[in-house]
Structure formats: structure tokens, C-alpha cells
Image 1 (cartoon, helix red, strand yellow):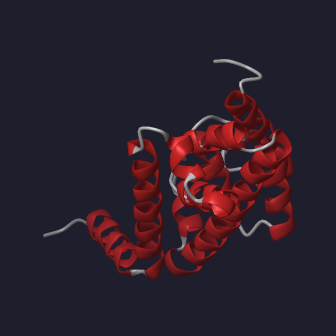
Image 2: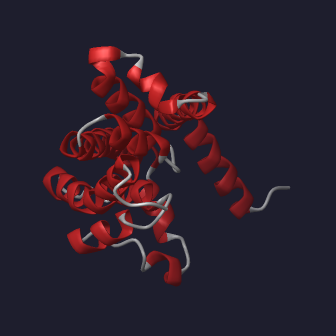
Length: 193
């Protein structure tokens, strides 16, 4: 006979896997990983983007937006932007991709909260973990600046807790400025690793 906790966990897992939110996350993650793998497989990433000709900025923006949706977005594309384009355009492309990817994932997590009730599951976490689930502007900006998954986590929190879109977009913009500038400068060769 199954224990009540086991039944509850199994029911929650089953509900999550059957939700369109889960399959949207899987699809977005797969597309992002495919874009990242393609970009990383190129012997000359800058040449691969340059091959798009006049459409190169749009191609770079699209590729970067695709990889932003993955928990560990690619840092190759923002650096390539700095190599190929004038510094201001490279920074603008990096920020634009951050805003586009952040907005898309914000709505994915809003939908996830409606379908799966993520907030309820977060409230079941230990108290020490719950205190990090802060949704004020400063916390979201600081969280977004953490390497790798910080941006994804900030976007997930904003979507799940229903942070107003304007606050989320401001946190994405402010939190993405340092990384956008640094990666573009690295690509331009102005600063070195």
C-alpha cells in the first residue's frame, strides 16, 4: 500500500508531465540546446554568423535568444557579436536577445504557475530555501547577474510569482547590461580573458 506522501508526489509529478507547460519547457530547452550545440560545433563561430550576410545581426539575435531559454545560455554568441559588429550594435544585440528571451520565458512560467501551481510547491520547500525566492526589483537584478542559471532563475521567479511585466523587463534590462557590455568588449578585443 502506498503512503499518502508517495501518492501526493506521484500525483503532482503526473500532473506536471501531462501539462502543456512541461512540454513547452522541453521544446524550448531542446531548441536552445540545438542552437547552442550548432554554434559550438562551428570551427569558426564568427564565420558562421558572418555567412548570413546582411541578415547576420538578425541571425545572431535569433541564435542568442534561442540559447537564453536554456538554463546555461551560450556565451559564445555575445562574444561573436563583439567580434563582428560595432560595439554599440553588439551590446544592443546582446541586450535585445536578453529581453526577448526573458520575456518569452516569463510568459512560459506564468503559464506554468496557472497549470501546475509552482508557487504552492515552492512554499513546501525548507524555510532557508524559500527566503531566496524574492521578487523585488533589486533582488531580481542581483540574481540575474549570477553566472549561468541566475538569469533563468530570476525569470522563473518573476513569472511564477506574477511580478508585473514592466518590473520584470526592467530587471532583465538592468541585470543584463554588465554581461552584455563585457561579452561585447571581449569579442571586440578591448578586454582580454
